[in-house]
Length: 436
Image (tube, rainbow, N blue to C red; front, side, top):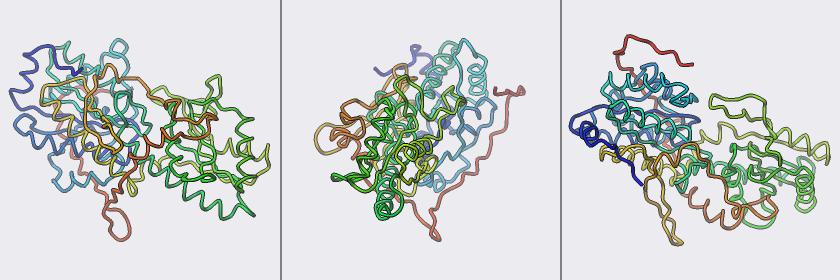
């Protein structure tokens, strides 16, 4: 159900006079997150009767805490439009997670102080599940302090693990990149396997959900096509079964291509690639799965191998982005502004898949208290019975999300990506705030 401010007077205070908006990017960036920024800024400029300016946080929410606000009105229409074809985070992102209100109320109150000082009454937070939680808490605090604020979460995550939305902007382009890379690398290995590499392992992102690894399955069109083995976080890793599957593929096809999610784990929940450290969100730092699997294959089977880690390449690959993904990323940014000026708060624009064989989608809405800190994993019916491949149901879900080639314009053989001026607004608060 859509949430609005309980107090009619607070809501009317927002809508009765012009105020500024704050937009911030959070967490790992994507090849299309800037399209959402474009959607927010362009749509806000169409509502100048209620939104004066859009300020962007320098390096995400840290920009608000440190009062480093970028004035996007200094950017030309062409520059803002150029965000549509530019990967990464144009204003900077961060992995700073605001703790609970009880544990660190000071940070939330600091946000409200900055918003109050700069007449910011629209808050757009572009990120994943942790960002949805922050957006919800800021909305709640604003209400409790009597400060009128429309807080809207703009969905983004390559992991595709946000609930209450058919898919997450950013995922479709990663899925396209991984599927294409799997097919191209497989052709390379197949051409050399008679006298060289027998096993190729590609490690992709995906901490608890195997959506990205699953996308590699789109590369296979007929029996024998790669990938021959997909490792999902949702399926407990069994060393004996894994090695048997690799050996079977090599004997039958001459080679084996493995696509492994970084979140692959054993039956007791231990990540195969756990480095023993934690990131700013408290998540285990993962890495090194591909070489570990390769060493396992070499030791137990003796096959010559190669491995690769898609890493940042998969989420930065704007040159082969999905048009569907780009369109959806812009649409959620646009919808966020429309929801805010309509007086809604503590909600997220969600992608709703249409019914029927022909793919269609529209923008719906989801309450943040049902989105925050909830992970959507791969349904079991999307994974084959043996746990190493995707099913037709998964293919039907994934295929539309990679459709269309949103090529950027090129100059001298390279994509033309824009850079923002990122001019900061003068500070108004004397007190500086140190981010822990």
